[in-house]
Image (cartoon, rainbow, N blue to C red; front, side, top):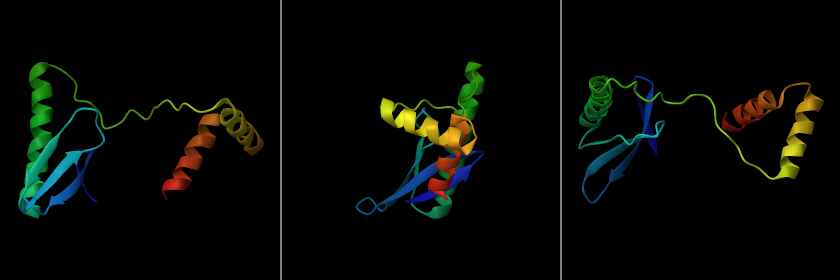
Length: 109
């Protein structure tokens, strides 16, 4: 899957062979923003217009647009795993939060 970025928003792109059309969806929001195009330039323009429309819509309503991500999320796990990662963090001499962040960073790079 390909990705595109605009004003801090990220979208994934898929190609529909039957329709001969590119579809995109913004993935770093809870709000749903989709767009489409028949060429890469049309797709880029449609993506930018969709984001700009979203931002304008929020401004018209007097609402702050949803930020791509706050940097916080809740993880639920089994108690034994919680205990093990807490112990691993203490052995490493860091907070549980820092240990989890470091481990997640390593897993995506």
